[in-house]
Image (cartoon, rainbow over the protein chains, first blue to last red):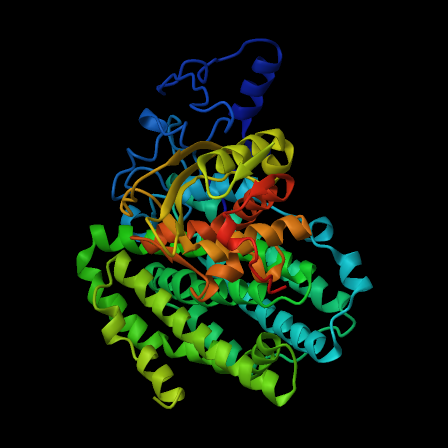
Length: 371
Length: 157
């Protein structure tokens, strides 16, 4: 164990005597009138209920969070009375502009109400009654295998950092919990989809996993967030939209449509965090450009690996006949061009000006297309 | 009673149906977005409508002369034939099929385009995809009068 408190409560005579007196009705009532703000909140919109936004008042609100947290490294909830020797939990992310995004409370409330359950929200029986042609089902099983590798890192990206973030940023930590749960749901849904289709899981991807590990291993939170939430998030959002668009069954269309919604929230947080970070720390712009100069090759590892690209072409073209593969290849080429354009646009809008021209991705794709 | 497409009455009818289906849309979750629908005519001015969704419902529907993309999230724009084909497909299947979903129609911007100023706001189309699709799918329960010149649109699926 890494931490032992100063005394053993079994040996604490003072606590023993105090507890006995309290049990006999001699209460201290030190907690009864603490130095905290008294509020009585009601929902601004009764239909929406009482949200974190409604609770953004006075000393309880996130608007009053200082840029640097200097006074609370414990687990005490923001707005409570801090007294005595509260423990230091060793948070390393104590600066608001390192982690915050103005949309976190909205995204958290949205994530909770837009939750779905793979067990009952996907038409598994319909899928069983009208199975896909075998080549398409094999391709779908491979995509589900690949996307689980991605979801693991989208989940790990949030969970790796969440404990290091100061508890004062409680709405953000709550949102990251929702993101972890969203990605856990994706793991569940993709696994069930692969196993329900008659094929089971297919092949892990070495190239994709190496790329994912590099994104997951970012050294700072701002690098990790732009790498996982914006870069990987943009890849996944494009893939989910595309797979919903080319889906051969209503069940697959709904599956990827629901996953699209969750992933769009992850991208929204990533874009919002990048925007807030660069607005308050503009000198970090060059550092993040430099990070992406080195990290963007991961996008090629993700989408260029055979375990993603080939089944994607088969699904996009509707089969493995030459004409279907030609049509699928054309569709995937357009998808990749659109993906890179949208990713670059998000970076630019969030404050990474010049990303579109500095990035090698668009040029690489043009070369790939023989232009 | 039938409603014309495109018209304010058409979208007001969808708004009413959405309120009647409160439980279904509550299950889909919060939907908070303001976006435009633009129907491009081969002759004459485009028809434009602004839809405001809050919490679980469509709170406001208004016919507008133009859009300010800096004030709204995005605009779904397509020609009259595409919109009519989409609504006819929804009527035929009780909801859009894969080829006529908002996602498919806008995916590569071939049949419908998404206009926007801020990509973060455009991404609300993806965040609220299921709610918006099911809102449009309510057209399957309406008796719709289509413009005479488009009633022979070929369904592609």
